[in-house]
Length: 231
Image (cartoon, rainbow, N blue to C red; front, side, top):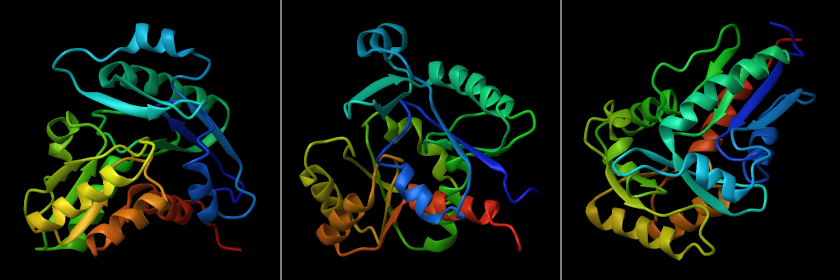
């Protein structure tokens, strides 16, 4: 693999992501070439809400737009866009493509690039580290407690779940979610959204006194391992 292999990232919302990309870049080898793309790039909010509004009873995702606001979209519609965006990044020479979302996307494929899917990495990593300990998971949408539950099947115990959005104006709901999971018996917390950043980890840890795993930091470190070449 070339030492100058290009990395493409795909956010569900709009790129670049000033909350996530600094965490990624902190760990990547110096000089790594990156292309950042979003599934909703170039679209105004009213167009996004018209095209990709959540459907009753169907899985949803929450993501960030360029103006810093958040939007909830239909997950199935995002899967179709993901496939197109992966192909576009491959056509631009990306040897690695990282999906900046912890949601589970079944049967996602790349023609030639090395596809990095956080949902296939974070949950097994957590399971291996937790062992028999109880895991508490914080998700941004209440609907995701059910729609994303299957990705935690590697855990020895079903996870305890709570809801708090990384896109809220304050961290109190996150702190309360962390405290509640601690009260329920969690030994370890996972912030299960790429939008959670270091300040969220700090708030959850301070509120609960528990170890807190930040999904995007886990993915950034492991992606860097793939891209680091021997001299």
